Image 1: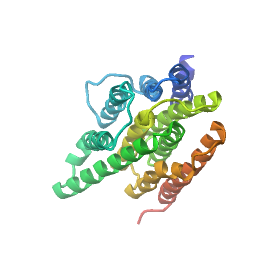
Image 2: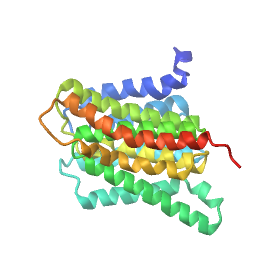
Image 3: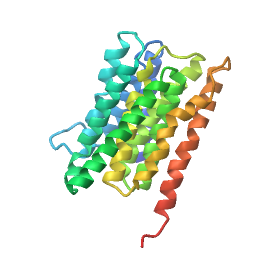
Image 4: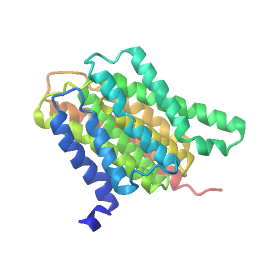
Length: 274
């Protein structure tokens, strides 16, 4: 069993998915379904790197930020209110600042002007990604599909950027978001979960993408199509169709910008440097 758990595919996909699926089944009828994604992410952290934070590397900072996404879920969803524009803006701002903090060591190695430009760009990217995820998360099917595709996109981009550990984290949080989508499909109805449903997936996936740019070999422009993933889910209008069909169509729409981002990274990886 121990040897099986050392398999990267098991760590990144199977264990986070099963962990999140169990948690999602228990939380399906609550507004706290997003905690299942935190559980799935925690599972891959436990297997891949552990929970020691003696040395706060960029990756361990990412882990801390990902785990602490449970706080806004608890604070906002236990009040059972809608996530208003002010709350979305505040969460997006904190997420943007967290992105700068996670990448701080890398930014400090750059010239001042380059570091400022990269830091501002990183903050804007993560803030925009998180805000748009919160906006579409008012529909839990859209929210879960967004988290699924963002996680898979982050994992694939990190893998193409030559960072296996970051790829595991991205895929894991995508698998966890997929579990929250699957329980709704099986139940045949939407969860009462609020807009923070896929906050953990969007934050972790965004940070994975940023670190793949800053610490690996991923070109920055490969992240741009991922900003369209939350908005692509809105192309599927609300209707009376079954939940499983809505989930499928929503994920399919979000797959288009995902493939564009991965295609850009693949093309860049296959282009010889001069």
